[in-house]
Amino acid sequence: MGKIAACNVTNDLFALNALSVTNFSAFIGVPTDIPTDFPMKIINGMRDFLKDINTDVHGGHTIYNPWPLFGGSASAVLKNTEIIQKRGIKISDRLIVTKPLGVQPIMAAYRVMKSEISLLDDYNLDEIRKSIDIGVKCMTTSNRNVVKIVHEGNFFNSIHAMTDITGFGFSGHLEEMLEDSNLGADISKIPVIPLTDSLAEYFGYRLREGFSPEIAGPMLIAVDSQEFDDFVRALDDSDVFWCDVGIISNKHQSIRFQKDNPLFEVAEFK
Image 1 (cartoon, rainbow, N blue to C red):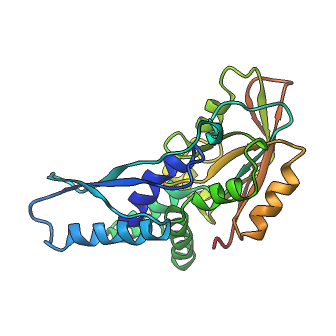
Image 2: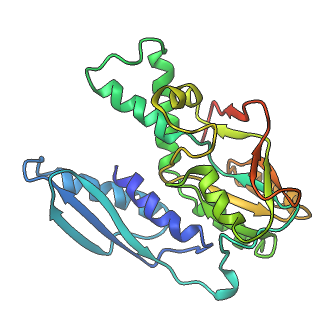
């Protein structure tokens, strides 16, 4: 949980193309009856994650609270010329995401499996456990690996818009990127964690429509079509997952999905 919280916080900086986190202040709310080593384990999880991106916990705040809360605030310094905003998308840009989606439905399955409620009798629980592992890997994988490629490959002008996918889901954050552009997006496919299509329908998450929330989700990047091959080749060279999900169009001002279900399962995420 500490790793997931730290990843979710710092990804907001990487979404703007910041390369290094200069400060991380942890925030923890804990019940009075929780085991005394619990807050320290959360901090240790945060520190383990942050050390992998060359920073650490520099301070923070802890309170008593009826239920656990984990999070923090982070800051970074970068040149104005290096900032990549969520708006600036252009016609014919290619859209990519850098992780499979579906964290909410698979973690809903995780909560059910931890309870005594029998709601998953029609599913193979071993397969669900494999998908849970992929979901946790997604939530603890920093988006800094994408930013490093942008900086090292000098792709600042190749990427017209960029954001991370979190609480508004794929479609919600893509709508933000398209705002005031008079452009639309044609979506051909969306990578998802195995079983999450079925689980999303079962639990009521709008994954097929792109509105299922994500936690510490992937980058959503609009890449110049002329520079696309060079950029994804750099991602491949660094073993960074990516998926070409669609293209920007001037024929309409909305998000259009292909008629058949655009979701496809990603069996492995490293």
